[in-house]
Length: 301
Image (tube, rainbow, N blue to C red):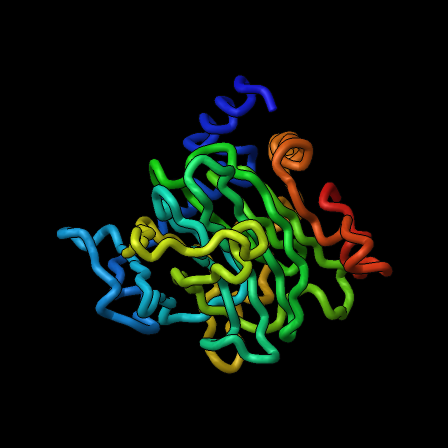
């Protein structure tokens, strides 16, 4: 990949990509981000959670005893969800930092889920990000990308756009994955269950780094990931069924322009596809001799 293009991609981290994201910037400015206590609850190991003095940066740590995690107090169905993360520096082989949405507090058998998983590495190796989509407890829809920057040196923004037409995973406003709906009842697109947003750090050295060949070096613990600037512009769930779920007029993330990538986003998505994808389950015919139904849907439509 060209150095010039990487520099341009990095520059886009602070610029909008097309009409949708111009609207997004305006929308985000109107969203009250609030404090950690306003938005989140600790899931486990509260003694592995700390904040900066002003409370605006949150730290999760992992040692040989346990990791830590937090979740939103509210559930959402559709919207824009964004957070800035700085990942574990140095030798982080075996460590996974997860940032995801899920319809359940635990890994239930019927859960819907949208995953960002940041896979730890040995110092000097490429930084990998894995995404996955679950519906009714069925996942197996992994994609892996190489990041075009060092995610341990500074904070980068990781976002999910979720509506009834598509799910888009963004890194610094660059779309790295597009997961389409077919407009019919199906078993692959999660659009019925409201979800919490979670983040956690945990040990997964049985699979995370080089398929489990690289183990966690506990002499380097604690491993710390940090977070800030959580922002949500979405439909907060209210039983039995909030009105905002069905509208296509009041929310930018559920209007026609958010159902597709913009022209500028398509250019960047094409570059990502050419240069950064290292695994796509839709191209794994050994694993899936008959490709899943959603693999026939074009991300360009």
